[in-house]
Amino acid sequence: MKHNEIEAKSFRVAQLYDQFDITGDRFDERFTGDIEPPESWSIGVIVGKSGTGKTTIARELFGEYFAHFDYSASCVVDDFDKSIPSVELFGVLSSVGFASPPSWLKPYSVLSNGEKMRVDLARAILQDQEIIIFDEYTSVVDREVAQIGSLALQKSVRRAGKRFIAVTCHYDVIEWLEPDWVFSTDEMTMTRGSVRRPKIDIEVRKIKGLWGMFRRYHYLNHDISRSADEFVAFYHDKPIGFSAWIHFPNNMGLSMMKGHRFVVLPDYQGVGLNSRLVNFCADYYNSKIDFVGITTSHKGFAKAWMREKNWRLIRAGHTSINTNIKALNKSVSSARNTYSFRYFPKREGAANV
Image (cartoon, rainbow, N blue to C red; front, top):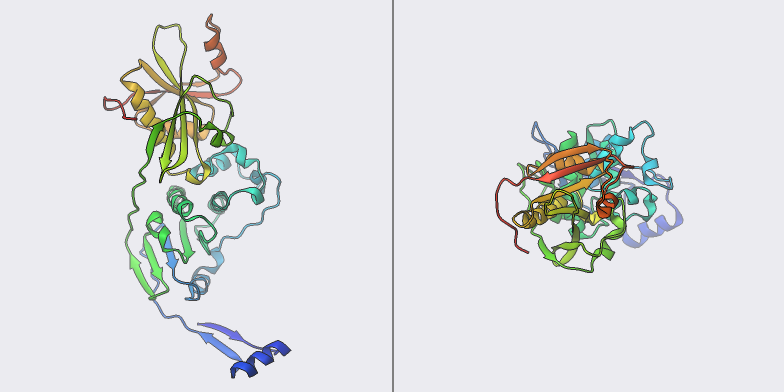
């Protein structure tokens, strides 16, 4: 039950009463329904058309858990609690699909709506509370971005051991959230049981000339070797991911390919597309090349590759190599802590491009 009482009538309110023949000073809205989540759950959804009581019901039942944050810092990472260790903060930002360090240095106000949603989620996850509620969930986000972001969100929430409730008028995100329960305010009905999401089908093309749309999102370097092989992942015919590979000089007489640049656009991060693209390319080279490897100084990426079954960590730390191969010396970083992996596929056969 929601109450609204008119305590004092302004001139305009009095005109409204007279014009529309309104009587009484108290107006009640009654909502009847049964919201009893299953005993064990991670993701819930309260969905319905505007004016059907979604927010009222959510505030009545879970009001203390509504997410709301203020942002004022010139770099968004400085808006987070200073007591949070940087390693933990960077890990959570990456886990929610906001994995572009150059964007971490921007103020919240200039981020895209999709990026803002992920930053809000990261702050909520790092709060000391079990339940997170987002009102007007994805209302200002492009629908495709909303769907991909919802998939990244639910993965992060479950990984963090939190509970998340989306309050939304958009039915198109439900299957991407894979909720454990859904309450519809249109019918005032409760549905329990996990909803399965659609598959994300991407097309990979070996194509030159698209690095320009990805370069500013790379965490380390905006340059690219002219001799690199370039692969681009397309989703619904839109380029969303980039992977470049170069021949790696060595003094062992081996043919070697090394990952050169990997980027997924921010709105499509956090759902495993980068690993799918890199694995596709590694599989493509595997039957042609003696050694396929990648090196990264990004700890979040390194942790992700450690979980990949087809990749093995072969070196971690600083590298100091001095050879008579100039190209090899240039390709080695001694100033940063890096992680090198080699591709060891469980199955044979090259991918098709």
